[in-house]
Length: 427
Ligand SMILES: *[C@@H]1O[C@H](CO)[C@@H](O)[C@H](O)[C@H]1NC(C)=O
Ligand SMILES: *[C@@H]1O[C@H](CO)[C@@H](O)[C@H](O)[C@H]1NC(C)=O
Ligand SMILES: [Cu+2]
Image (cartoon, rainbow, N blue to C red; front, top):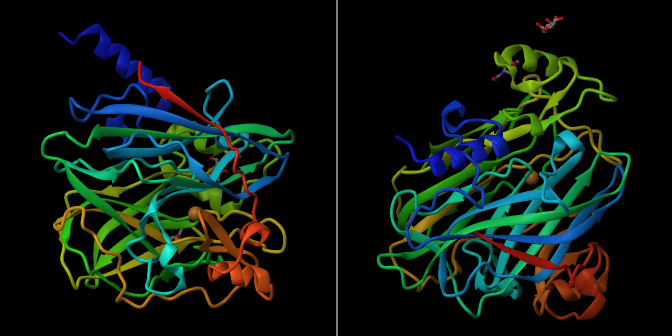
């Protein structure tokens, strides 16, 4: 006999996600809610609402930077994280109503990034601790052992958010972060870190879209760390079939990209002409989650990898994004580009053998962006603030190198220093 509260819990999860865990394809995972079962008796789930962001009709909020946002907890380990987007009344904001979580990056200026922090002027490069596209994939660090991402009292989280609105009216949206965490004193917990592999390495992640079958690779990165690989997520854009993490030349994580498994990730047909490719895709899919045949499915879930063994010092990692625009229609571009840029990102959480005393990688050469087109948020030279490197602008270049102040730190993006955060606790 199942307790009524459990039945209610399952019913809530079905309502909020539309797909039963059992129906998910290989590697895909259920999303977390405030009411998800806890992974540890000591764990708590907290939700932080960031915003509101006002996104103009048929417009975007481009890389809005908030240098300081609320921490989920201090002196704790984050055991799971997930991004979301919602309206003021708490209902989900997604593609079915024209709202896109184009991307978000959460970073910790109190720690250094495992790949991009170097001895150079960029030594302030903060640790990217989590990122998400509209697919909103859960990251879990304690799936195979008591690991978590440490949050210290001295840490500061910052948030970069890009949102898109395909509706004819402006929207007021909240970026949400759901965290599960345990207090640092929880017996047996140890520190994990994140390794974010990107085909542009420490660049702006954007790659030009092509037609047909094509792929993007990062350069090889040699790990100075060893530990347990806890969880790997591959991120690509529409058109991607797989985003793989290769270890020593072999696929260690195949993150299949799944399209339109939930109605919220299907653009309504009205006013949108389906491409031939997208009609193919709907006929191929074999199940009815897709809605009308004139609608367009977008990436809704990604396969994640857990329990895939260890990373040793000297192991070589590469991220590989595989695209097939015949199989999955790519997004039409805004502005001068015919197609939206693509991405190939694979981020892995690593349970460190060496515990908290992690030192940033200062030995492996890292390719920094050399082909600069437009404004690239790559530097972090202003105290506590990110910097946009703008070609041919001396002040921005100075700021990028850590020599500038004030407005140069913020050119090219929207600074949102006073963005509100509301903390919603589990009841
Ligand atoms: C897909 O299904 C529709 C409706 O049954 C049909 O008209 C169309 O020809 C099919 N497309 C392909 C490529 O099979
Ligand atoms: C690309 O997609 C098309 C349409 O689904 C398929 O026929 C073709 O085999 C795919 N190519 C590769 C290399 O996977
Ligand atoms: Cu992306």
